[in-house]
Length: 450
Image 1 (cartoon, rainbow, N blue to C red):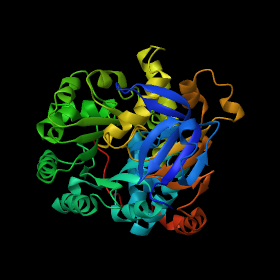
Image 2: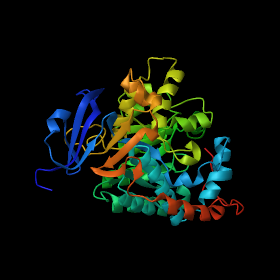
Image 3: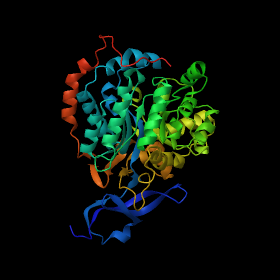
């Protein structure tokens, strides 16, 4: 390698780009030059004909996109995929998920994280926001496999002050780890499992240490009604009065956000974002979904998410993108909303902003980190292409992702995983499943009672 060599040149592709207003467009017969982990240039393919590089990727018939961001998940829960099906939320939590989670060891979490990271890399996800337990194990897997992650150690008030202290200690210890690919947050579980006093203490710690907060809130309409009955305010009102909205906060789900909550979110002193994971809402038969249109109108970024695989059955953000567009059309009664280009905007720039990385990710432009996926549109299910945005959102699938890179490091090339070996993970996890899924002990890590 000579000093003038680029690290990677991707050539001959169509590049998803954003204009100065953040609107999505496409540049045909283009090339991307990557150097020192960042995008150096997006240009015409002819302009890089003589550019030397350590690796050159010919990408005819492929679209280069910013890597997808899974804005809210519980990656280790892939080990619980399909364990509790066709149930209302209370029974799902109390009789299945929380009893099984009481069995989890750090090794179970690590194995689940390995399987989840492999799934996400193969689906074009380059960054994920995780909110779970034994997060040292997740951070270790992220550092090894090359993904980017926004991680928080979850806690309940039932754990006493030690839970909050562990969340802070984790956030401070891993902030900036994995060569800067790991960012961290304080992670109270939700207003119905964390007291007002603990939420206020969390807000104080967030401001003191310059940390964001990631939590569930107003997940559904029933939670909002229960909060009004018990506390006289909505879950968003709880976040406001405890100071959480004065921090940089990522709110998971928010299908129970009311019209009266919108001014609180609009005028919040901190940076507020919401993550939507529509597949789970459909599965639990919730009557509402995240009010994406209303949130967008008040300037609150809405990122795309999957939640954990125990409720969603997959970590496929591609599916979340299509479902978000379709569910928004259905719930608003407006076929002109959400358009394919708007959906791509939420999948890229808005998702990056939601996890606090809007200045580093979300668009392929000079100076942005080289988190790039190449999507093959030559298959029969994606041809012919009349509207490229619609093809990407409604016809392409996660298995069309051919190449995934983070910080200019290729994690998957031509569908081959390069940084994780799935076979031994499946073998060990399979041997651990009988003990993991046992519910005969009668324990729960928590009670679902909003």
